[in-house]
Image 1: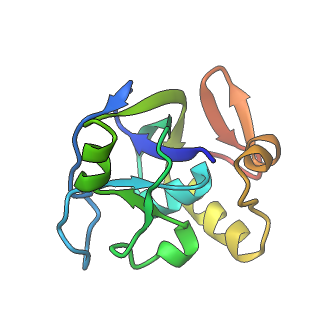
Image 2: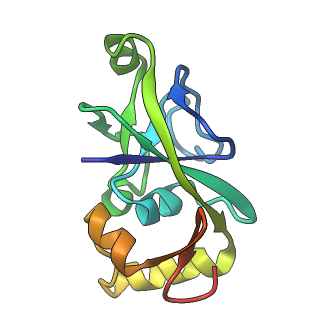
Length: 144
């Protein structure tokens, strides 16, 4: 199963962990936050007015997040230092595109999530809710 990671920069590998910027009420423990789909990753990160690079991270054993208050919605899993160390200190990351995160997109994602219109399967997600313009992922259900 692919795991998605959003970053403001393109990466080829993950060699360090950090405390997420939007960690209000969460434990300040360094980690890599991953989502099972891009839309879930966006809902977990929630940064407005930001362009994110979408990465697929190769890891077989992320653990369900005990940090995120919205983990039930986002399906967030994390890589902690012990997992990174067990992988030899780095994880491969492949940039598969980019997405512009704004208030309209976040609102539409939340509305469509609540209505059950967003697939939990990454292959279904790509074929049903995203349009590709080069490497830019655009939300099919509205302006992004």
